[in-house]
Image 1 (tube, protein in one colour):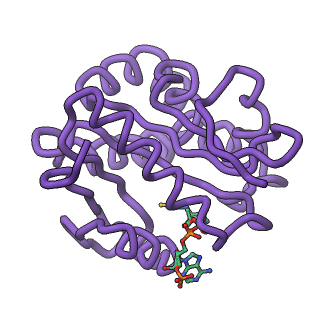
Image 2 (cartoon, protein in one colour):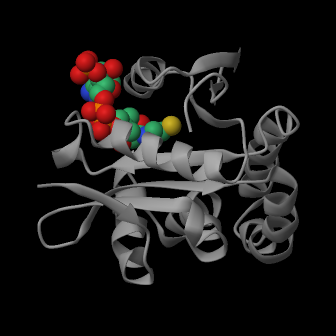
Length: 190
Ligand SMILES: CC(C)(COP(=O)(O)OP(=O)(O)OC[C@H]1O[C@@H](n2cnc3c(N)ncnc32)[C@H](O)[C@@H]1OP(=O)(O)O)[C@@H](O)C(=O)NCCC(=O)NCCS
């Protein structure tokens, strides 16, 4: 049976592989892989492991994850110091992409300081695992007195949009490239 548990250091390589696989980058050039991992994975599992959860199979191997930065300002400071310089060295395009990505989260930092990323291995999707991971993170953030969480997904990622709407998320903003969505914890029992 699949189970949800807090992220552990031993999950790192599987989590990074799921991230690359779901971004369709498993066989991409090294620079592309590096960019994806720097932007969407490494900060969270290295700097905020207590805000990360995994779904595991019967052998305790990660098959999905949810990873979160609980405070945008703290995230941006550390990300700019340790991760952004590595992104900037990849290419000018990545330099620009990374800043647009930061902007898309910073727009909502006052109402929703916490943002997250979620990915489930394809073979394990649509079994309720993503919803369980959202619940695990929500409980963790509620314990820390946060009142909501947000994410930005591709505007054309209908699978993810359906998933978030099914889990009670509302749309904050839609542009040609992305959709910002958020879940409010208000009114829910702790
Ligand atoms: C989006 C994702 C995290 C959802 O996790 P999950 O474990 O598959 O989702 P759950 O089983 O908890 O919820 C299922 C609901 O999600 C939506 N959904 C999931 N997969 C879907 C698909 N292939 N097509 C349409 N809707 C889908 C539906 O609303 C579905 O409800 P339904 O089965 O009643 O129609 C997961 O499918 C995934 O990792 N997708 C690829 C990567 C991705 O898009 N990540 C999010 C980036 S912002």
